[in-house]
Image (cartoon, rainbow, N blue to C red):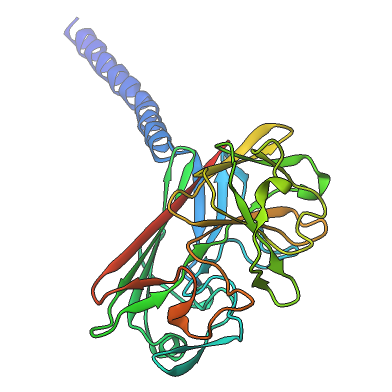
Length: 319
């Protein structure tokens, strides 16, 4: 009888051990699944590069939304610094000295220092000083929250004894087969006084005479993107009441572009069957056809004192 009880007890203990072990994978799976949900709560996956601190991929719910940099245009989302667009003569004078700066600046082609998760820094160096005679730090950071992506730019003047001059802007390109003529850009507010700055297509410069934006916008709110929308380069808006615009397909919102602190909004794509459209928030513009050769006299040029910093950001909500 005692032997029988001992065997029975051992079998009972063995059964408990087997059952406990069989439950471990279940508990482990549940903990892992919870962590995955928390890590992907924002529904966005992004990739960035140390070259130009450029955003190179945006997936919303697993679907790529950023231009692939392969067809028609070889970039995804360059940072425009220290100029937007091009200089009238291709060069400028700063403190009486001659400097050349390429179209949209040099930052997009430089290697940044990675300082955090999707966070980068470019410090002035011997190459930048040949093009812009100021010591600086340019910080670029990308953040996601649910369906919204934030682009954050910060510039610090590290020049000990001189104010720093520069321009800045963004240039993200989003997937959009606009040549099918099924897309619209809708402004958040009714635009009564919006203006367009025409581009002198032969020179790539801003024209002096503004055009009433409502010659292009229908019912003071809607821009229909057509095959020929960009034959004269970008559509550059100023005097904008809205702080956001919506890209829509057949009337359904694809994304919302927020540019509250920027003075200008450019909308651009390559002519043809280019499968993307760029929304370009600019703090200042390319040179005008009559712009001064002096950098200090450029329209809306930013100027900060030694040790001061300039912060600006924009964001995109995906649907």
